[in-house]
Length: 79
Image (cartoon, rainbow, N blue to C red; front, top):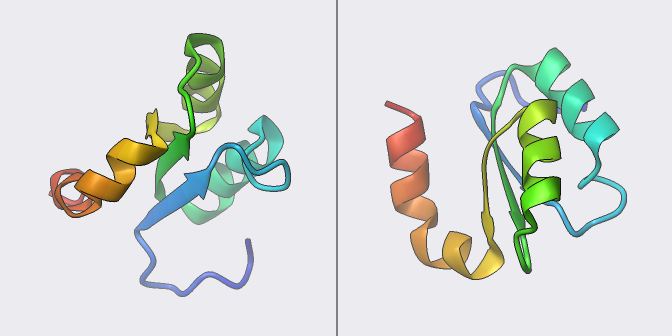
């Protein structure tokens, strides 16, 4: 978390990854780095989606969607 560049504004997190895709990490990252966080997972589950949003993810979407729409997501969030 501490090695992020100063000009970093958006973070994209694989929520299927056990090390980074968990409530504690996302909450800590959100508190310390003040990033706009986008979470993605193979299959979005409503309960997990709500937990990750409460932790600090602005958006939680399927992995296939982020690959297709990453540029438009970033452009829309950075406005």
